[in-house]
Image (cartoon, rainbow, N blue to C red):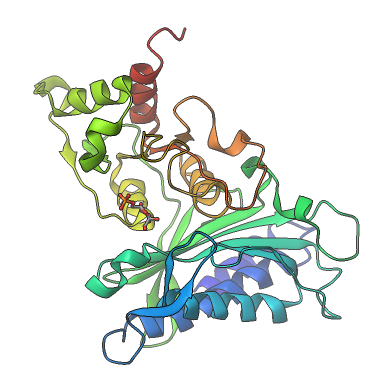
Length: 330
Ligand code: P6P
């Protein structure tokens, strides 16, 4: 069970206070509540849209709002988190109740990634990222949240699909837990996940092909050429839900690309609460995650909701794509 696993892992680190363990358990509890609503969406009035738009001008789906509220509530009473950033919140949230204001962790999350797929029953996910605060004490500051991904102390996601799985790392490998609804527990189902160095799946929104840089067009053409020795043509798989596309590649191998384009000059996905946590998981599983030029986890963030291009998945495939993007690189 997830709780036992967290406590066992904590015991392996004599200086662990148990705060991170409790934070992970609080997130997993919020995930179980979100799971319950996601899995009855359509039966109750939780599909569809609210009257609200978020900081990005996107219409907020009812389930987005529900998931955001569940995670905010869980973290505000956790006592282990002093600050929060969410895709659904324009500014960061200072958690300054008596038990939390001196807490040593901050959490950033996308409460329900892939929300455009909610109403058509396609897998969606919650993504989270945890840092130790950098400010000494007092209310959480923006600088506590604007840390580069390499400083994460834990990160993970919950995918609400054919089953609900929680996949996370605290820097010592990646483990996957599948929710058994009959007992309401996450059970260890995928110990020590490793991503294959190469595979035969690439994942990109092919509809944007004409908007892409020449090097990336050449890489996509390379994926489509016939070459028995390298198993090409690869298969193109694109769910349109980052967590689902990433999870498939984590388990089977593959590369996911959301690039810069003339439509999205900075890419579309968010650095702090989408790309950093999944880049952390990818690297912990032996994979790679870059912007096509720079390691995702090395990017120094400037704003909470900044975007970044991302090439993530099997290390060998990311390197292959980079060679097409940077033909003159040594
Ligand atoms: P496009 C979902 O809306 C999302 O944020 C990610 O989960 C997904 O990978 C991406 O956008 C899909 O974007 O432009 O291909 O529809």
